[in-house]
Length: 237
Image (cartoon, one colour):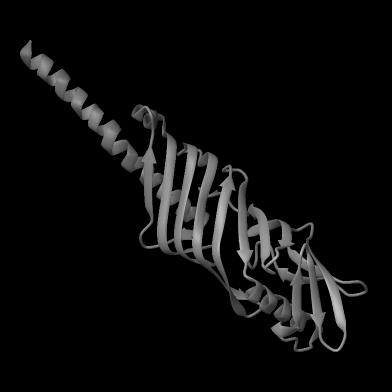
């Protein structure tokens, strides 16, 4: 009888250890594979999985998944650090009910032949619709506009000739001043349009950056404030 009770007790301990230790590790491994499939690459991806109660992990359901990485890349973006939390996660379904986090020190390596630096990209929304917010500093925004205008017109336009003003205006002051409006087109590209001139695409959605823009504005400092939607799910296809 004592031997039977001992066996039952030992089995209960083993099951508890599997639930508390083994399953989070299994879930973390599956989710790491998922974020890599979504396009995130780094040597030190850390995935922490929590569930309350812990046995929800038997169905591979997690309340909270935190993904961290440094010196990472994501769909062409170079990222110094990443810290993203997913809520109400189905590990097998690769779905999440909520997303919140930030990418810091982001570089878009090739926009019109040069790098574009972003201090941060903020993520929010749900797993099906991950919202994106970022700001392009005024100096970098002027360089971006000048480069694209030069590429389209064939005229070498310096960044010093570009003036950005709220809420969505850009002026190119060369021989004559051209006034244009910043907007987002139907494809989610960031464009500048002026009367009687073809639109100038400043950022190509899904090509220059893995996102589709939904809005743009110029703040009081002349920075470009952008919002959009991530073009791929955070847990892969």
